[in-house]
Image 1 (spheres, rainbow, N blue to C red):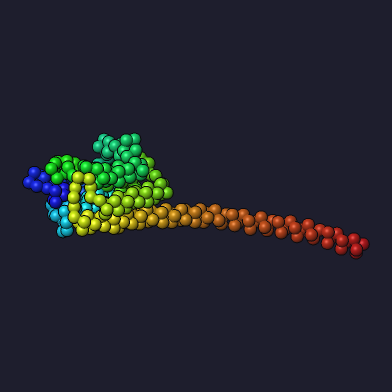
Image 2 (spheres, rainbow, N blue to C red; image 1 turned 180 degrees about the vertical axis):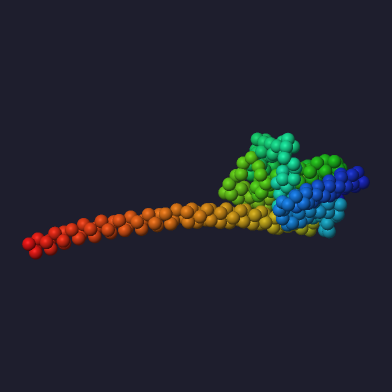
Length: 301
């Protein structure tokens, strides 16, 4: 999926990837249309996000970005492994499929797969981070990258892994679709910070040395490392915004729930307190009046 490393033999995987992305986008839009035709709400922004993600994959498969060879590859790496996964996950495709499929065995089967224990383990944020960022370290800090030029199908397999790992990590951090376990914001935020740090360190190592077995020019290497570093920062900031919005929404819901609870119990408590206070003052005044009355009667006597 990196044109700078593709030849005629690699055109088949690239074209296949583009077709699959277009089919996925068309399937998503048809499912969203099905929901709206039966009266269900589905935000248009999700359609736009998912379609933009698939369009990015098509461009990464077929178009060579400007710049040196390694810089062009790094732009595609960002699109395939970070930008497109974020846009696709924001479209909430799993939720759409579960809602669009008619009730029955198929929907129950899909829900069972999504909530299965193996996928639950993969969706654990630290596991997803290791598969994503660890795979990038393996790609760029070993001789694996140098072999992609002569093995187009290996290059296609690596690109598929980068996309799948990016989707898994983004899905695990954002947690927008229904899954087996919804891990808390602290774990997901800490995982995002750790993964962002590892990604930045990898970019800095590329600034000083090419992947083993390769020899890119200093300018090309520096531009590629900067693309990875700053481009990764932008996507990671976007992920942090998603987490911040979830925290804000959750805090607002807790505040609304506690407010409704006070409204339900507040009048009763206030009413009860008022009655108790009235009873207390009535008993106190009665007890105070008795000595005064008895004293007055005794003085009269």
